[in-house]
Image 1 (tube, one colour):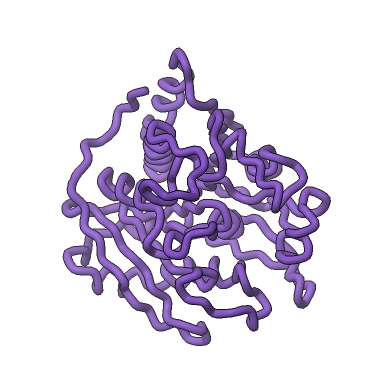
Image 2 (cartoon, one colour):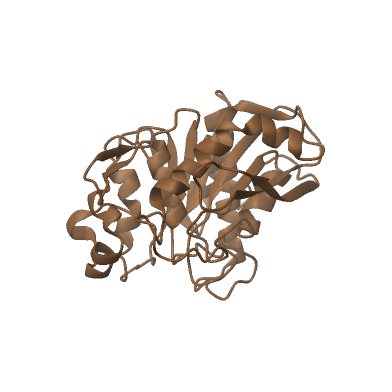
Length: 313
């Protein structure tokens, strides 16, 4: 499959950039990856998942996506959330171990301080387009981005309704994201991660591309099976697109890192498909009139042996 794309360019990466955050247990460490040249660059905020590895769940993960997006014109900003194993914060906090609210607040704080980030990173000053912001997240990171796009839940500690929608984010990419709560959850999830119990998507009206593997059977989290990861598409209002990847597991071919052992469905061609389609989707969402997404969908549909299918609403 060949999607017409921009020519890749050299990239620069800077980390850690340390942002002091009042009230946060530790400073916020971020990584910024950008094209070496160019101006008016759009931004992707990337939220890491959890998983069994020690360092992929931090600013060090997701190189296959980060490097590709940056080489094709995006500035990618990656925080290390409080849930990261690299911090080992323990379980005293009421939102531990996942820190679901703090994760979303990390992204808001980054947006609040884009000027400072731009000035602090060598060779980046004056090159960002602050009006073109997208957000992407894998697994638990997908839950974070769902909340920023308008999904909501009830705080299991105090019973208040929580809405963390961020209007500065214009489009989202949800990679193997968690689905609805209620009776879709496993007993393990309901007991250990009660914030999932009231998760719903009726308010998630920001445009988003939902990516799910048809073999992503996360039985430790849900009794529904792979379809759970399509909930952010089917239960949210449009505009939404759903990319279902055939024979793909939770790693979607290996998006969280190069050659990582936890990728049970390692497939470089699948990762390349995710790279290209996410790029095309965000180009068209952030630049009205851009036809990259429609062209990419047509290429996928016309293939003799497609690796997935796309639905839209």
